[in-house]
Length: 315
Image (cartoon, rainbow, N blue to C red):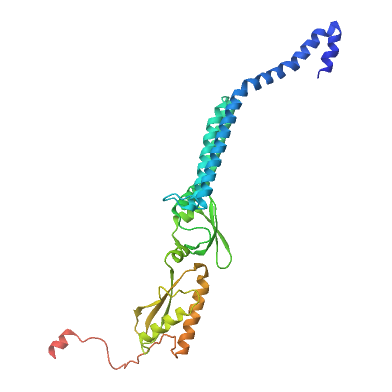
């Protein structure tokens, strides 16, 4: 770039042309250098804001890790709230940082820059209503604490262990090893049964019903059901199992055995073992597990139609 102007400057006839060519090269460079020097105060301000937010985010992350590991305990603040709260605070801090830095960016006052910002905001607002709804639902679920990772839950007709919670979806692994992905907005609007929480706090009650004939005393049935429950792996001795007589039908009573367990993840195995033990215990005592039905033979000569009122008075 400098060779041609220097060559022209040697000859008097082309000296003015050489100066003009040099001005074409030097003026843009001078303008760029002047712009950089003038922008240095703004650049320094942006750097200070960025570093302040960066170390503030690190401080909040340190607090979140301490609370999550339970080395720091805050009254009324659960450890599983720590990281979600940190992510919210980090997002707000970075949004605040962008708002503070924006006026110091080169060209921030130009119409093109502002037009692009409005266009991007419009696209995001129109295309992310469902996404924003799921994110808000995810935050609400986090602070509602209906379940944690690893809990055995039932969400409408889906039962399994929670394997992942994200801002958008919740994933559940069913007993058949199927991973079901459910949007958080659907989770929040549905009813959730948490088996693991009940098992941890006061014991989960499992139950099963059998119907035995009236010829077997209820005390015998209760005794056999309780013994079968106590012999089932996973059933705790305290509180003890108990039996309820749920109905007295025309042909047989219905008994419901209830037992406490502490491991909700083994729910299917414990139910299977309980049913097997009930069969074994009743077979040992010679009591048949069946629902007898009785049939009455009617004499067709007798009518069930009541006599007329006038006929009764004459008689």
